[in-house]
Length: 111
Image (tube, rainbow, N blue to C red; front, side):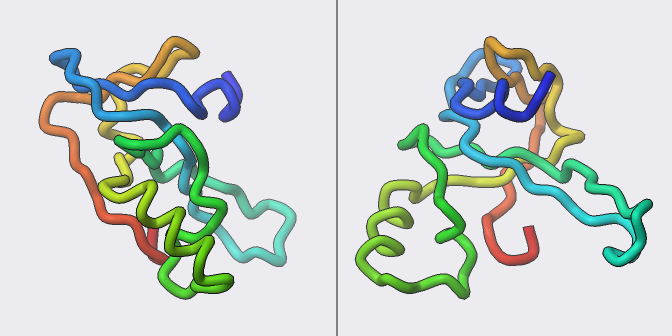
C-alpha cells in the first residue's frame, strides 16, 4: 500500500464511530539527514472531522501568510488531530480503523 491510498479514506473507531477522513501523514527523520542511510518513519495520520482536503502546511503554527488562506484552512479543519501510527488497528484502501483507547494528539510543529 502507498500513502496515497490512505489519503481521503474514512477513519473510524473500533466500534464503527466515524471520526472523519485521513488528510495527511506525519513522518520523523531517523538518523543524520546528511547520511544516505537516513530513513523516514511514519509517526501517525492526521484526521479531519470536517474536510477531506489537506492543510497545505498551514496547520504549522509558524505559517500565517497569506492570512486569509491560513485563517480559512484552520477554520475548515478545526478539530483535526494526529493519531499515532501504533494506535491504527487496520489500514486498507477502504479506510482506517483505530484501536480501542486510541489517542488524539493536537497538531503543531512538533508533530
